[in-house]
Length: 488
Ligand SMILES: *Cc1c(COP(=O)(O)O)cnc(C)c1O
Image (cartoon, rainbow, N blue to C red):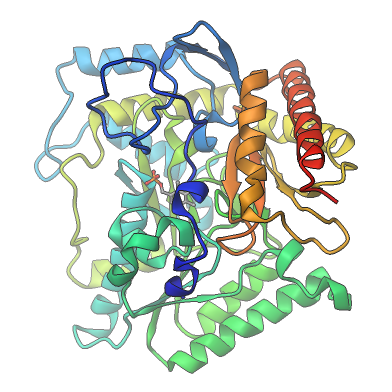
């Protein structure tokens, strides 16, 4: 599959590079940036939504990086928590021998807190440093589950994921990802025991021309998954992996109603574990603690991963929540998870993240996210909705994707050469708002989107200012594209 796109995809065009900026200094950087040709902007300071660049310009951060900064930048309470942890002298200890109250309390907050996982049987938290590490841990735990359940001779070694999805950048997580531009040079590292099914991406993948409804689309995909499991053979599949809302790859794409309930049922019928990757869409981003909470029916994962919004970017923290069903099998077997990182449950990262989670619980920040999400949705709908190159506006909470198309009646994207997505981000940035861009939205090669994912404590006035500037960026780009003869 990768080889097909090798010739047609320009990786440098489609990776999510920051707004290109020429190297400012005469001295070449020692840091290996994403690009060897252009360095990102140097940042002097940041506070709340405002990022101040070294050239004195201020940018409103409407995306929190990649939907990370859920409380904005520069939080004093988090600063105090980090300082207190380091003042105690406990900055690092090895998790084999020691634990810390920062890590224990954070895990309790994630499991037993008012928004915690134990409401769904998710009884233990595993804490690491990146979403990719969390996904690797989830893949290994899922495999170990069957090793313990069926014995070392278990036939289960296959993973099924979806096309147009991202699960991380380490070799393990990359193997189940299907974000094609990010995999191009590494095609030979692809394990054979991974396969992909149709994305739950209604705007481009439903048979809307034939009038297929949301429910029919969902049912078709669930049938496809069932048939896929059958074609792989009984007792072959370890887990099905999916993002409840697809993040960077296609832009805040929720599944059609009923899809995840069907997925859960089919997984159960085949004894397959369900891993939900909530690294981008979870931890309050969609207006509930977990994105899966808003799915129709009771959809509970066996393993769930979290990252970006978990620690709000103050420290590198990510993790995994594990269901009782998985823990019980381990308890009856080796009673250990055969995995580990030097920096797992890092005390400073945990103290920082505990402060974030306490602020969120105390101040009703997720409720604000849900409330402000409705405001953002209507502002985007009113301004960008009717515009000729805006095909779809989708998302939940404060997680919104705008998909750009060349033709709204056919839903055909712009040719990649127009670079509509990257240029939209650049235009918005020049006007003073940072959004998160995406290309290859439709199939890894074609399509453009932008993500707007402001902090959960954003105000209505801030949202109005963001949308005003984003709309102006769109208008200017629309004109540029039309003037260059790329439009309709
Ligand atoms: C960002 C992301 C990851 C990887 O997280 P990193 O912290 O970048 O390693 C995994 N899954 C999804 C859905 C993501 O958005």
